[in-house]
Image (cartoon, rainbow, N blue to C red):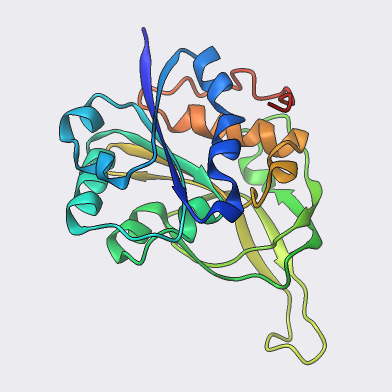
Length: 233
């Protein structure tokens, strides 16, 4: 049975929304999704399209949602449309409290443009299909400090170490990958994905594609090719 994915991309070009989402469209197609791409947030006002959509993949940093756009997206997710994405394309998108309540987090800051940090898979969640068989890893990129919701099912974390003269004197654990349910819909988010090099890291690519597939309505819940590194377009 063909399922339908809607890729919504745009906003700040620094996160290369077209190129970044383009990495995952072949994997979605291989998993049986018919993929539509939109570069206008008014797509969230098309109730018929969203009702027929099993998965929304969003990569839209900054920007603004109108009341109708926000209500349309949230209604669709509550009714069962999956929602997934990464980095600023989700948690640094829009100034909309209802939207951030749905996705479960809000970007606050990061310590410099690029730091090396460890990502640890939560041992208690290691059997989850998004991270099953994956091990912790190290990345050199933006480390996101966020406000997050206790409803999130956190699959992986990082730790902000205390810095000399900084405001926090103790290590601060921070979610990196989470899922959640919102109404009948599934939500997936990963904080990693500032650039193409981040997303083509083998483990990051694997868990991101698995997360997209997991979030889809009637999702496969499996790896679905998520263990392979994509070629550059």
